[in-house]
Image 1 (tube, rainbow, N blue to C red):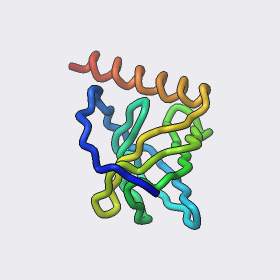
Image 2: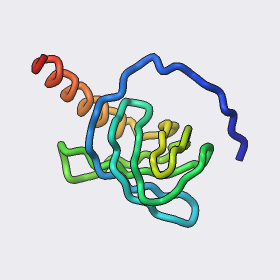
Image 3: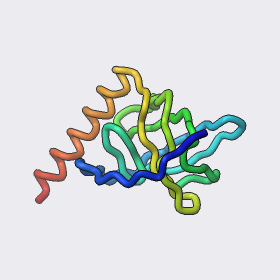
Length: 114
């Protein structure tokens, strides 16, 4: 799997969260906690080692509903031990809407509290 180590400055902010994540890659199933989230990526502290460039299928459990959001294709961008960053490549329109609604509510709550 080809992976370019190109540094890109993020033009958006990730929202702090604590969400259960299951990630499937080839021959393993990992479980972790998403510690921040945006519409096109997240940071996870997991229990299974991944490597940059690896492709995963991810199930993200948001606190608004019991049913997880399935993200069909995520690419691992960076790794530090069991901590890694994932870039969302493919997600259903329903999943995108649910994540967007969740993040908007979190952002409104944060702005109202400051």
